[in-house]
Structures are given as structure tokens and as C-alpha cells.
Image 1 (cartoon, rainbow, N blue to C red):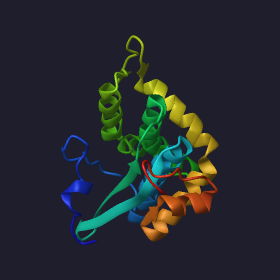
Image 2: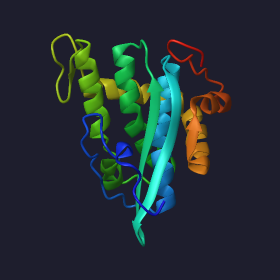
Image 3: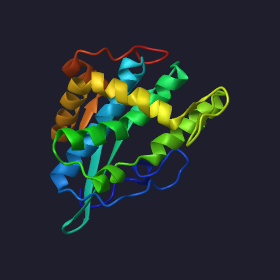
Length: 198
């Protein structure tokens, strides 16, 4: 795309513009990294019993020799364990950093550019609506810290790396995948859409 996508793809759940970071990678490497990010969300959500609608990489060139990449994974959530939901939120950043490590691209600067504070803030806000306490930098009484949730996500990303890698490369090639396509290529089950057929 030559121009930015519609604003709904660039806003977080609070309606704020998602932050951007300079990623010291070429376009193809950065695009694949975002595919890993979205694949992390989609694969973990599916394994936790969430119906995945679609997952995609969004890329555009705002000016010559300058690119921007983002992504979007959509779900139909009915009932999911609160901490599983939070781990799914953390999985994008974890999978993207793991991609850098697995492909020999990791540097501290590149890892920092994978930060997805909007995913953390979504988890904090969603869990709070249901009475769960998720601390950004501490363990609240009766709750968990973001670090603990990241640990849960890191474990699952490691166990599901083959599936995440398969989805990421297919997404990089096709831009957008449906949940059913993800299930078919990984052997996972896309749970039925809440309140109706899948």
C-alpha cells in the first residue's frame, strides 16, 4: 500500500494511535517479524479455546524508501481463562523477539523495537473489567504481574514454535489468513464462533 490504512487499524483499544518504533531491519525482515507477532497472538488464542476470525500484516510506504508495518488479529471471545487471555496478548511480542533470535537478527535495539505496550494495556484493561488484577511492574495482591504473564506466553510460544513459524510465513506470503486457514495449516482446532457455527 502506498498510503496508510484506515485509522481503525492504527488505533489501540482505547482509541489512541499505536506508538511506532524505528526497526533497524529491511522491509522484508520487518514484515516477517510482524507476521510472527500476529501469528503468536493467533496460535496461542486458538490453543486457549478462542475463535480466531483472521490475522494479517498491514504494510505501507508513506514515502519512498520508508516503510511502516503493523498487524491485526481479530477474535470472537466468549469465555476464556483470564490469564490465558493475558498470555495471548503477550505472545505477539514474545514471538517477534524469538523470530529475531531464531533468524540471527537479534540486537538489543531490535528487541526493544518489538515492544507492544498496547497489547499489555489491552490485557490490563480487559482483565480489570472482570475483576482480575494485572500489574505492569509488580504483583498485585491476588493477581499477577505482566512479567509472570510473559513467562506463561514464552513457555507456550516455545512449545508452539513450529505452528507459529508456519503461520507467520504463510501470512507474510498471503498478507491475511482466516482462522480456519490457520487451523488447516497447523492441525490446530479453531473453536466454534460463540453463539453460532464456526
